[in-house]
Length: 246
Image 1 (cartoon, rainbow, N blue to C red):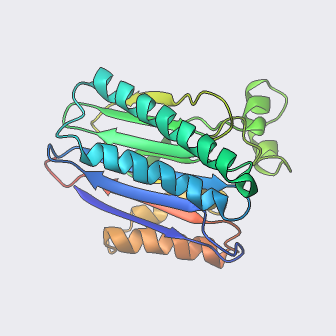
Image 2: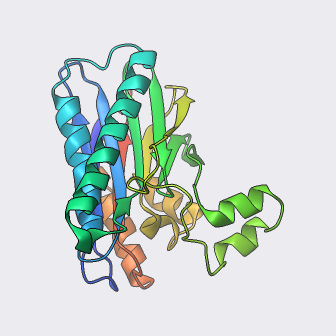
């Protein structure tokens, strides 16, 4: 496996509220996480960092995540724990009221691949040079699209396209959407909406399919392209590529 992750504040925001990591445990299992924080007084970056730190520590403590059912339970149990931690932090720090974060993660073992998400950060499986979106955005406009009240094109430019219906720290029980994905893929891409709001899927694919670039150069180029188009949000990417024979 080749992996690389990077986060960038963009060109407009004064600071970066995203957090991202990729980890490998003793059993060669991979955990990728991207979180996009929200809230005043830098509370968003606290929330996103809490998720990445908590999940990362718990993952590093494991020799293996076990079966697929074990892995799903592990993801949900830990997400609920960190959700409570975020809510406790906000309660003890009134200036952080309203803090929260999205979370998208992928867990890859030799036997299975599962994605989990809450919010509007995206998870993609890569197959034959194409990005296939796995996760489901928990946004107001997505609900309206599903109800037939908005078209996909209208949703792209809707003034409330960033209104979240679910996030960690929202005061409710955290419930991840879980997706079971065939392991016969070529790679995984997780990102905050700072990438997908600035570049089309086709533009992202073009960079990822450029064989003249190394994995770190591809991620860096995607972020550079976002910033060249205005960089209106923080941009975070976690990227894993299977090498031939894996």
